[in-house]
Amino acid sequence: MSRVIFLDIDGVLNSNFGNNEHQIEISDGTLIDEEKIKLLAYLVRETNSKIILHSGWRFGFDSELKPLCKEANKLVELLEKEDLHIKGITPNLTTEEIRQAKKFSLVKADEILLWINLHNDVAEWVVLDDLDLHNTQIEQHQVKPDQTVGLTLENVKQAVKILMG
Image (cartoon, rainbow, N blue to C red; front, side, top):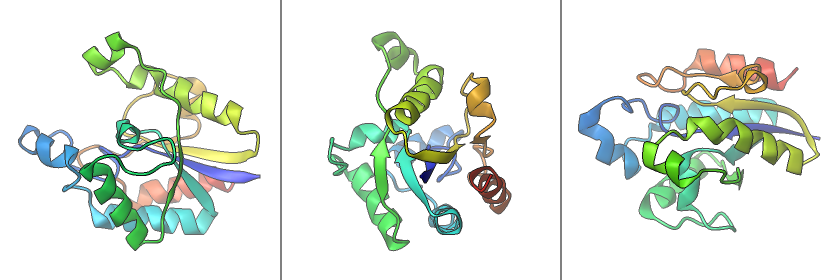
């Protein structure tokens, strides 16, 4: 049985998501905070968990998890510095309306639960996402960093408690 971290990027591994001046830098991967990646690495090592990407960043990867764009490539490089690897991505349940309205949080919970249902070896799981995912089952497993700060040691401690039962 495995432990899984469902990882969002914006608002978790970077912390200027709400700053309009930096939207472009965030989307090109330059504002991923290496200190946040070190915190993620600590969480992975402490809990022996695997990372499943459930962020919109997953669209930057092909079906074999190879980066398709410079942003995804930069993310992989930064993760690999800490010996971290993305082990999977959640399925895409978005519709054209959701994409146009940028309301991805409306389907993220369903995407995570579908992934769990398709992988029957999941023992414990945690969701790292700064957004409200509109699902009570997910809420019990979610650690919600402040998007203006990103992942903190307190968030990691909370995630460890969830993953270790």
